[in-house]
Amino acid sequence: MMLEPLQYALGAVSGSLVGFILGLIGGGGSILAVPLMVYLVGVPNPHIAIGTSALAVAVNAGINLIAHARTRAVKWQCASIYAAAGMIGAYFGSSAGKVFDGHRLLFLFALLMIAVGVLMLRKRSDSGNPDVECQRHNAPKVIVYGSMTGLFSGFFGIGGGFLIVPGLIAATGMPMINAIGSSLVAVTVFGFTTAINYAASGLVDWPLAVVFIAGGIAGGIAGIFASRRLYTRKGALNLVFSGMIFMVAAYIIFDFITKP
Image (cartoon, rainbow, N blue to C red; front, side, top):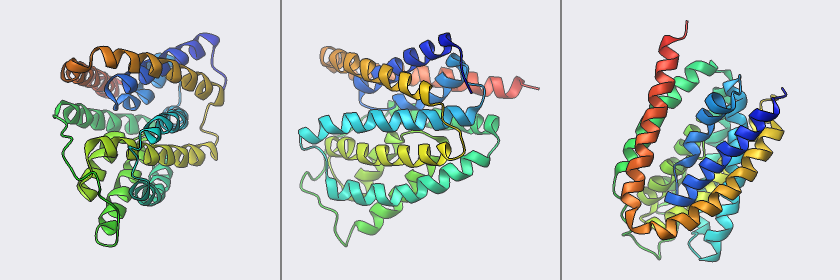
């Protein structure tokens, strides 16, 4: 499937917007990737939008992981167990997503977006045990949470950081800053697992993925710069982002209901 040059340009703009939001508020932006590809770029097949966005999100998460690793914010043992368990869930989730009707999948995606918007309105706490390690007593809980979030991530083709971060905190008791850094390991693994599964069925638009990733890198740099200037107003930024999420979700639901 070849898109028009304008559509690829819009793909770069969409990637920039997602990257900017990720850099600005530290999460949630990837939830917009699929709606942007479908409704702004005009990708006609929702499954291609999901497969392509999964690849783009995985690459951008891997790039962000490097920065978090340099600050020693990543709990590698916990992140590895969580990601390994979630990779299996992501495979089965993406396999189910491929055979699910694309437009019904978008409708369910809109419901998930509403849940994300609500979660983004909640205050984040950074309390926790910074010395936590994943051992025999908490590993089973990490595996269960990892499997379930991987399943959701694969089914909807999203990074799933908004699920992975609270999942890591609930399973291990680590602080928020460590959960955010560690979550990027799982986001990267889940995204690549989903993208490989979709690519095997020819459901990834590679040129669109490239321009989306390039836009995401540029937008992420701008978002990080802006976040440093607006850090004290992060709660207000979350409120604005949640409002945008609700509006996009409402549009998808309206589009689904009114389509013949």
